[in-house]
Length: 237
Image 1 (cartoon, rainbow, N blue to C red):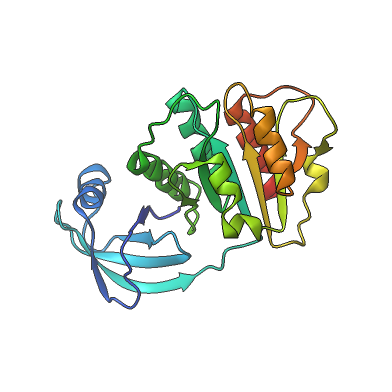
Image 2: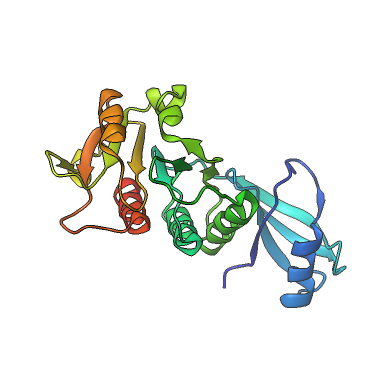
């Protein structure tokens, strides 16, 4: 049976004992009914996984002692998905959950010309990523960025230095299959996914001028969040 796993945002490397925050303490003690001596895992979302044992089952200030720890190197390449915010929050949240489960490295919310919804609740979105990381038994949390404008993103140095850059859009024209284009031997990939209504022609031209390759995700027209998940599957393979 897998031990319960919880997220700790603080740097606790080298600490023999750790006090859990109130929300985590309540979940451990009130919801799971865990007692002194029982074990659980803690991860910082940066590769560290700690095996701990409860030494104080206080419902607001549960304390654990660290039995051992291990560090897991992040596997594979840096995979980034820049996807437009969506009018329906639940669909964007669904994408965040699935991209995390698939092990995507970085998620960048995009503000495009046709993006209808500008509001972004970072804390809520971050919590969705944490829950998905824990559920999928991972020790690495994707980096979630604040929303950024389309043109601004393409000029960022880390994007310029990405080894493979793709844009998925629905405008007719010559496009290659993303699955056939991804080179697993290269260190990094990024793909741009547009909003409802797709990217504008000007955005597509701007992307191709910045060395983004137009790609197809399949033969059918996909919703933005489905396109994001399809890209996540292909990039994570």
